[in-house]
Length: 227
Ligand SMILES: C[S@@+](CC[C@H](N)C(=O)[O-])C[C@H]1O[C@@H](n2cnc3c(N)ncnc32)[C@H](O)[C@@H]1O
Image 1 (cartoon, rainbow, N blue to C red):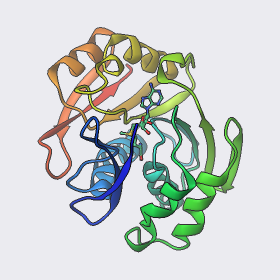
Image 2: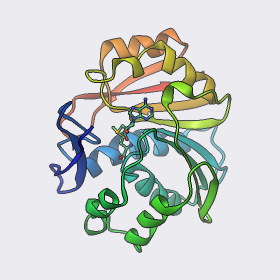
Image 3: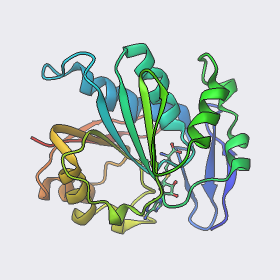
Image 4: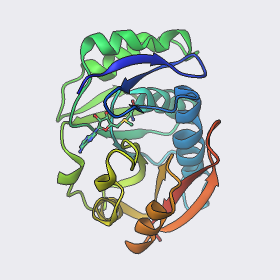
């Protein structure tokens, strides 16, 4: 499918799929959305739970590695928190080198060596666990979500598939059951979505689900916990 680069509300870029009128991130702000949904409501929430022991590595599963923006922001957050992150990104259709260069996150992500880190996240080989820094390991898996069979492997899932409007098959009980199985006990899944049918599918496979305030431009989002 054709992909084009667009600028979102906070000045950061993302990819738009004209055929579906769908984006890789919120049109209101790609960085803002990632920081709110995945870092604040996901990673920060996870490390602030009483059961979390400081400095224990956190295994994150990202559903839809895409531009690598969520991974990039998580890299710097792990560094700040001093928490080692073992990050696995699933992606069936990796973006091209030209698209990686076009994202230009260096001007908006105010961290040291952003471009080098971003290039490294994209240039590491697929299907292999790579050490990126003392607090970040990355495994990129070129795989369809439907083929995931991991069990008790992850602490946190960033569920960042395209919306249910365009890919309803990814927001039902079949995929959420896979997520439930892939998570360890007390594991957490966060997503930007807030639809009632999505929440009910999560509950049907055993998750405890919270409705939380969404990122700018979106009223709510969901967080699901494996009890
Ligand atoms: C909303 S975008 C993810 C954005 C990404 N998290 C980022 O930071 O750029 C959804 C991603 O899921 C991928 N995708 C769509 N259908 C898929 C499938 N069935 N299996 C695996 N990946 C899929 C797309 O190629 C796209 O990269």
